[in-house]
Amino acid sequence: MKTLQILGVGCAKCSALMETTEQAAKAMGLEYKLEKVTELQKIMSFGVLMTPALVVDGVVKVAGRVPPLEEIKKMLA
Image 1 (cartoon, rainbow, N blue to C red):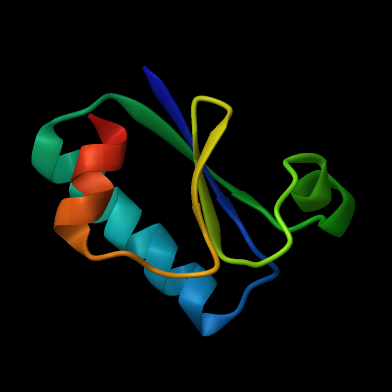
Image 2: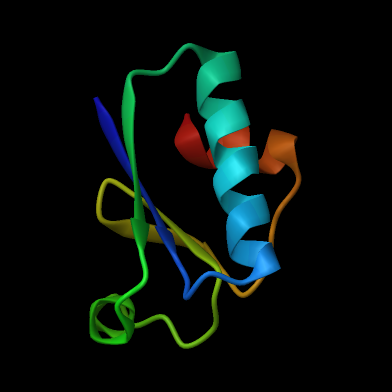
């Protein structure tokens, strides 16, 4: 099971990244747990300075933008 985390304080881009990540995971048939991280200190503990960010199994895959669905699928593979 993959652990997916969306880091962000709740902006529109954060919501878009969460939706697109969930779409990608479902399309790939992955077993996953999706968590939204909104605490600033926890976000900073990942070394992320720009949100939104996608973390897959503890590794930051992208920060500061919402990549397209196909790019997210590659990050989850």
